[in-house]
Image (cartoon, rainbow, N blue to C red; front, side, top):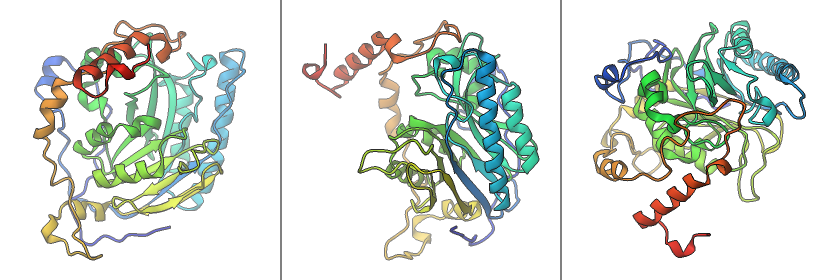
Length: 386
């Protein structure tokens, strides 16, 4: 374990950010897109973070909903055992990998509801072990009938769901971008990019390949995130990507993968806990089951974020850079506003939770995106496949 001590007390926060509630477009228009509650005055003590690298349930071939749910609950039994081990190490937050409540397989649609009995069991485990739990599910949401989402969620020690993020860049489920305005009308930008203000600091979550899209992590940072939880089950996000997201956003990044995922020979995709300087504080080797634990000093991070470049001594022979203080967001705004690639509202009218969402079902959307890439000069049409 790596232990970083606070350099001095800094303004802190212990107020939890509640889940977003439905808001009208008029109400949302009055609020700043990046507004977050002001920080309080409490100091956050260093706390213990644990990533669990464990197998996810094999949900095929299940013959019916009851059998699929039984498989999920067997997986939750394994989570209980992992939490017992983490609690013995005095863990404050335990992050599980993607698919822990089942994946996007055909027989898993319509199995998990949010809220529902499987989610409630995770809440009870958090109460039992008095830890924060980061978990993942493919779940239906009563707020959006006829859709299912790739959901990352965080439960606090009391068993309250304090964060729920529906993945944006996804092809195994509905994306909020598929019906963006309707989604915002329900949850607002605060619900689209939620950041939970907790006793451990400001926490955000994002699953799997979402990490490959730097805008998502940056949105969380601009909304105050200090710790990003990455629940994943893939062989694409190399440790270099994880280190980059941590450094460029000056955040702690916890990434929990599954042992079955092993990247190409040149890549490392196991579970990692990384500090805001890109240092790998703890890790589990690719392809192996286990846990990794580190102590996160959020107070120290807040101290670093509050120092200008010139105020920080070059401890290692070079000047430490406060990347966030140097952000010039205005210069990128016009290009982003003028550029649209993958078309919005692909599934505007919804489908049914019994029809799997796959990119092969929307080839026209990818053709539109590629045509727009030609128009912007990103690619040449002569290289496009027919």
